[in-house]
Length: 150
Image (cartoon, rainbow, N blue to C red; front, side):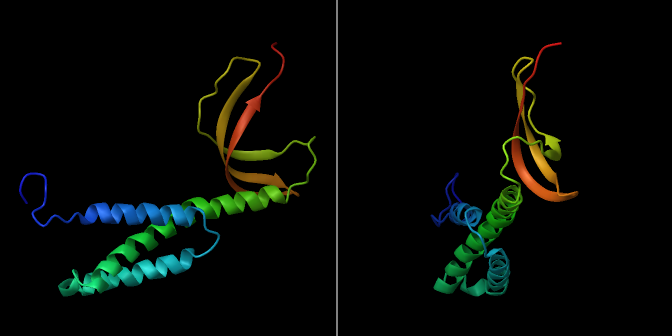
């Protein structure tokens, strides 16, 4: 390596980052395929570990790209798409009445802003009370509190 640029001119970390980001984006918008992505990433990872002598071959480069693409896809699917699908499913089962109160438990992730009697904040919801039992509800909920000043 000479200075900050490799003599070979290759930057495998940049290729890995591009592949990982592309996989994460695709996985975040997917509705299935998380398990397949995990298996594919594991297979490509083993291929990369065992096939050290053929890293510059087409199979080695393809394994490299597919490994990071599949790892990103699995990350996007399990960290973004799956919780969003669970929250959407739980929300769609609620009755369509507008005049109702729902009980949601979670963690407040933002400071309250606004001045009383109107304030708002954000809650990372974890569960929702519906039909006499708790249902999983992994969603970001925006809270608006309004009322009269005492």
